[in-house]
Image (tube, rainbow, N blue to C red; front, side):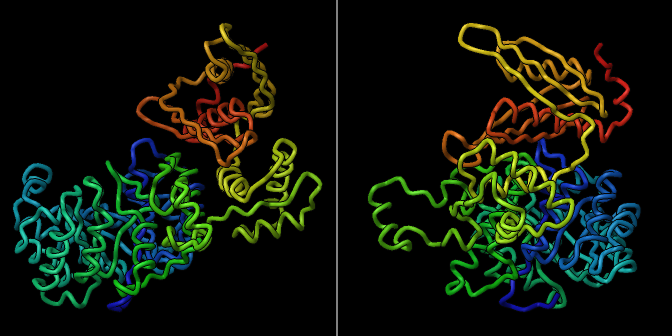
Length: 517
């Protein structure tokens, strides 16, 4: 990276801080799919994970480093030796690896969490950065809880980190405490108070506890920050991080006023948002800026009239510029592979061979059940069924449900388990509960349904329903997703998807299942 005053570098932490959102648990294939999409989006840095946190995190970071090209691939570590070496082992396969190491610098963190003195923290910063620098050229140093740190001490720690070899200095508002005017002045004070800071990139990482993460990030940019750390849809710890799409589109839409640019391909924004929502199971609120389903909706008659006459009367952005389109896909069950492939290509999906055949089969299945297929239907179909893991120990063969007012619901489920077809029936107060009870009889897994949510992918009575569930087993939570024009079927598919993830993590549980006679 170079310190171009007008270029803002986009550091994406969706796969690290974003995955720390409560209830989110991505497998390696899902993380890889998101990372590849982030590369298409054009982010400068992908923080792929915290390698020492778990074997799964290490493997995901390592695979992303080897298979995703374009962005810098970054692994997070504390300033501890074991962390840094583990991060290096994970990112060393990347063309452009980075180690991101951090230590807390606020008094409350040093006293109560680290139990370290200021001198010890300075030594930790120096030794950590020095070790990381001996392993990779590109080292980012973060002062955790920087905004609540003593400014003079913070500047001293940053100076030490630069002397040890840091190429990026990060100023986090870790707990989302700052306001824009304060944070802008704070970044400016650091920029002016740290000798040789012009040798580094100044970065900021803002949390959204007061709903000010994007505003704080923009204030920081105006005061000298050159890199912003963001997450798709603003996901992350607690109230989340600065939203990638909001920061990027604020810079783009107000470029004549702000004067900054990014390397983001904004046409990929909506697809990236939709994929992240689908794979994490975190639904996008309807009024979410930029990517919410109401972001470009107009109900007021005055607004509708204005938009019809001239879009810019009430829209400051063109939704098609973001990859949002209402164009209908004029394909049906008689359509051929060539036309289908061309339409997918126009949406950004370049499929070949077996992957194309699977996608075409899924499309045909949908075309038999849905009168009108929209581009939105295809986007979620591809992301949920093609980009997701295709390994299934449990596979839904059929589902029959009987329910009505004032009668108990009955469900019969046919489940193919490791190639063997099983069947069970169950009764319950509702059809979803009955289906899940029948599935539980066959799988015999000790699980608990924690959350269940449903949303329509498109409008109309034949809209596809997307169901997202979270299932717990012990202290672990697994997300499951299902898609169908039949909401009970979508519910069953979501539940089975979660169970398949459990089996992938705990293969020994396959022996728990008992074949019904």
